[in-house]
Image (tube, rainbow, N blue to C red; front, side):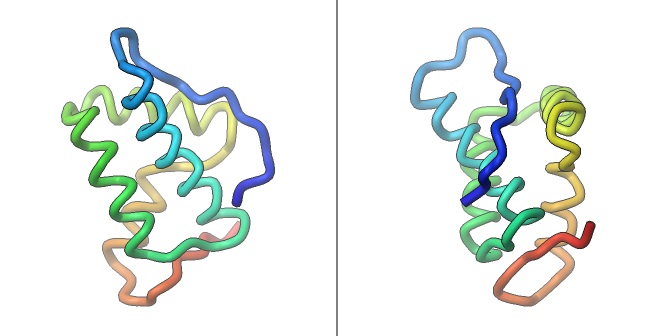
Length: 93
C-alpha cells in the first residue's frame, strides 16, 4: 500500500461512495509507482473510477491535480497497464 500522504482531488457533488471509489484509484496509481500493483486490480479500480468520472476533461483535470501533489500520473499508469501484458505493474522512476 502507498505510504505517502497526498491531497486527493475530488469534484463537487460526489457521494461518500464516489470518494471512496476514486480514492481507490489514486491509491492504486501511487502503489504502481511505489511498490507495484496487480494489473487486474489497477484496471478494475480505473474502470470503477470511469463510472464516476466518464468525462475525459474531468479525468484530465483530476490527473493534473493529483500529479501536481504526488508527482504521479494516472494516464501514464493506465497506459502502461494497457500496453503491458505482465501481471504486475511497476512504474520506473
